[in-house]
Image 1 (tube, rainbow, N blue to C red):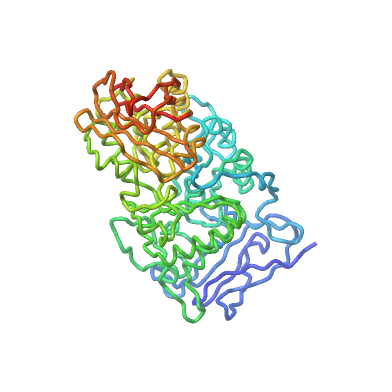
Image 2 (cartoon, rainbow, N blue to C red):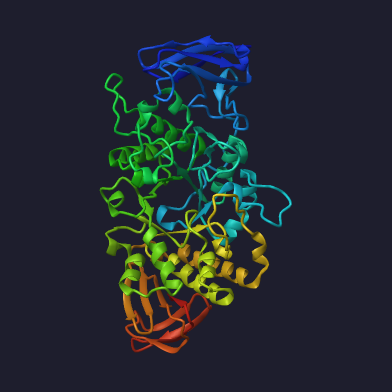
Length: 552
């Protein structure tokens, strides 16, 4: 039995539009434009799966005036991304449009609050499989197969690099062409929902990387009426990745901001239909419109309802204005942390004030523990092991410094983030080509030791609420020996002390004065007890080593 299904296209200043599809043998079906700027037509369709697209008289300056062009529906939730045609795909079930038939299983599972998060950034195509794996893998279902691994490691949030449909079969995803469609090379919409649902069932939040600064050059909106949604020219040619959304453009006739309207629809769709728990906003510095950001963050949170939702800006270099009380975002990537810690664990520099700035972001003007996300690397940087290797630091010396960095990222004020593979010493440099994680490294003693170290630190970060606060005090500084000690605490009596040696010297019987409390402290990384007395604690500090003392 056929039911009336509406197809519509928002193209307020275009002269004409028609619908073509498999249901019409690709013959044109005229569409009528109404006063709200939409072209509409209703087609009687039986339940099934159909391909379709629009033909529209373009207003874009790079076509002839009113030239007819074929465009994919900008709101298509599925696209034939494997062909040059890129038709939209519509599914009809029980007389209604559907995205898929996935039934959520774990919506009632409790999820961690923002201040409890340990985030794991991953790229779907490269996270599973690997050199020694005979299967290609690289799909949502293969990430699901690794969730038990992530649970054992202890992470409680994953940040997916962009999963919106991009041209071709491999990309980092920062060239989105279809904002409502999921990347077809990773699997179906139901596969992605199953991944998110399985994460929720394990108490893992899913943060999605959102690209709202720009789109890929052939995004349907660019073909319909480029300057209605985008800036005519790049505002910063040095940092331009495609047509840039114009969030300042206001259409008085329809009382709407076209670019805001579109991205608002995108964000609400992903939060509502895919049950995501946060968004990382790519290139927030280039978006440069706090009014829009305030609005989009509120749209996301209102759609999410009661559950926690974390909005993170990638604003590089970071600025406190984008977060804190008046800023639009909950937090931002803390890129100066990466640069500072890398310089210190490679031995390039020792600057106590710079170190204290990165470990205590309040000194940089940030206010709360969730206002910054700290990391030792991410997809935009080389793996730390590659950086150490470039400086001739290998084997045990490299892993020692790597562990020192892990202590700093897990005990600094802020939310820690891991880039996939760094927890066991992945060493590949950054590349935009496929670079699957080398899981065979886990068979090596040094790599497995680093993994165990991370696992222990993540457990401490999640279980000790002293590390969830913004409280941090530097109580011992020794510029000659390159030692820095700091304490973290909360009002209920939890305390953690970190003593870090940034030198290549073994410091035997090192005495730390002004220790926060006399009594028994537990050294977390080596699992032994030590007594502090008379305000002092004595310990051996290996070269480039941190000791982590936990009270009680």
